[in-house]
Amino acid sequence: MEWNDIYDENRNRIGRHLRGTPLGEGEYLFAVCVWVYDGRGRILLTRRAPEKSFAGTWENSGGAALAGEDSLTAVVRELFEETGIRAKPEQFRFLRTTKSKNGFFDHYCLQWDGVIEDIVLQPGETDGVQWCDFDQIHQLIREGAICSIIANQFLMEEPTLRRLSGMDS
Image 1 (cartoon, rainbow, N blue to C red):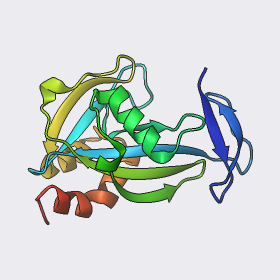
Image 2: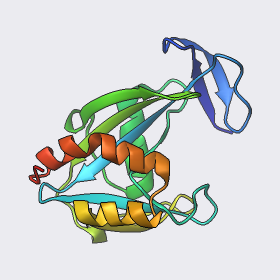
Image 3: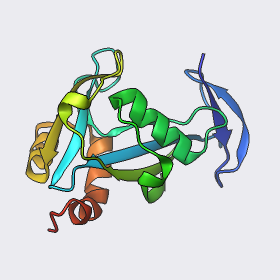
């Protein structure tokens, strides 16, 4: 059983939620997303496992914060769980917070100098990994290989990611 905190429309914590159960009116969950880049114009993408929603599509790492977690604790944990990448909270750069119908999302980026062979995929979560340049990501978006939610996140963060990764547009 996984428990998450529930928030109101102003992101005040108002209770707890059991994952997989419906949210009530005016209740929001909280999740984190991280774009990992190498400083040489590439972004790390993982592929969603067959048993996940949007199976087989490429994405950045992220997920729901567990009950009691703050944003940085959640992003450190999610990145490690999905990729095996160990990063300290101070290594993450906060990009922005967005709000959807049912949740708040804190967006981060992280420069990582590792290699694909260092990635440890989480069974049931991820089943593939690749470095992609910006043209390749746009091609994956055109092909529908990145779901629209993640594609929209990428397009929103692309100018910052290009600047940070050394690929100013």
